[in-house]
Image 1 (cartoon, rainbow, N blue to C red):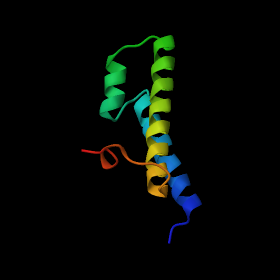
Image 2 (cartoon, rainbow, N blue to C red):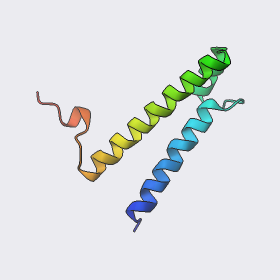
Image 3 (cartoon, one colour):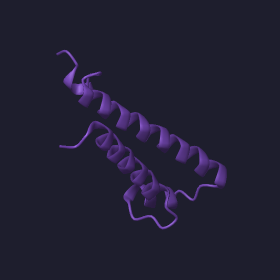
Image 4 (tube, rainbow, N blue to C red):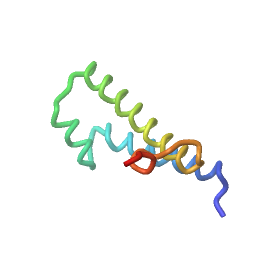
Length: 80
């Protein structure tokens, strides 16, 4: 059985891998290609990459909190 710390560490590794793939100078993902095609200057890249970093962190934390039972999960907690 996977320990909670191992699971969280693997989750963080996946998040970091996704971010790395998105900001790679030789993009292999659709997100990376879209960013490369945007031809952003260095300041724009910094801001977009910071936004992506924050969005991925928020999304992954939300999933972990849901799995832990500490938070609801959007469509699962909405009342009809």
